[in-house]
Length: 261
Image (cartoon, rainbow, N blue to C red; front, side, top):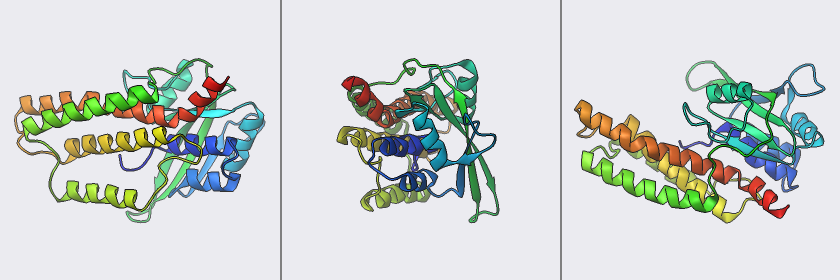
């Protein structure tokens, strides 16, 4: 998981925009990233899709004062608060953003076209009603940090024992790419986030990278069905912890606002 989820970018930079830390144009550019274009559909008062800058401004006027992230998976509605229709769409997309202060949420639909190496990516965020309630299963930053450290230690021990620690040229290249991005000083979160949120997100991304590499490239000695099952059993809770920590980091802006009330 070398790149952040689109919902993470939208929440982080949307929160920075709400805080007055960045301009609307800078926020939109950061959210779009390497994609070609992002639009928002279903916005109250609009008959068709509109651009991100207009949409974020409109939602602010409708009462949104912060954005949370949801990264649900089957059996784990992480960050969701309902209703069922929104939850189902978010689960299908595996991500969403949920407004704080007003009952609106956004779910991305991604389309890709073009040959390999020149893929044109468009994202349409569907604006839907959400239930104003605490998000499901989101830990505090402190809890997330402790869980990550424990999960990383446990997973490393199990994978080493199974001889399936990710290795080989593909895994090495992925780790080198992560280090290069970190050394380039990339912004892990948008301006205005507390340092602890940045630290938790960085660790969560490193843990998620370990999981991805172990799943995709860490064949090692795990050749029997029992060994493969043991690897999956070791990685599944680690992946869950990493997702929870990412959501906690992205949601830190809103959690601070709640504490200030």
